[in-house]
Image (tube, rainbow over all chains, first blue to last red; front, side, top):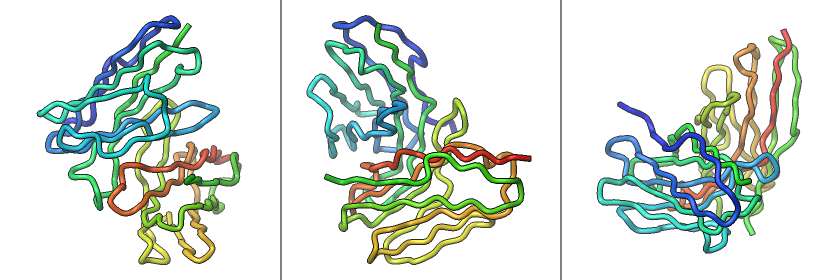
Length: 114
Length: 113
């Protein structure tokens, strides 16, 4: 079974621009979560989607948004980029959500904002 | 809000010795406590997890203990090997929200040969 796939792996943007990151979960997994990883703040939860609905949301500003498609693929968007948005963005999938604990992470998309 | 404190931030042990990493959580409603290992440049991977109805769980050289009263949980690695060198993250989540993990800051474990 293929793992969680994230694209692009690396990208560089400038302040004020927007970015869209993509995540394809493991086949059959319906829950997709997004995390931001930085050296200073560690791993922080952004949001989770299940069956095309946002089920949980972290404490990030409205510039961070996401969506999930009917095939469970997910995208996240960051608008009006700031320097502090530079981070590794990790996507994780799980089979059904809720009680099933294990998250399967992708390799991440490393965003650099200049 | 929910918070998970993890200590130590760095840990260096001799190969063959044991390593212990400790975490404290603030949300008494948390009931799921996983540990993830992240090797340099790689994705985090689950190594062991424990639910609040269990006090201890073991898997070969690794074990996790949970003290619900004190809101503490710990990771124990015995007979450490060079491939155990990585960053380890503890996390906690509430019922029906296992995907919304609150992570500790991580512990960089180095195994010295």
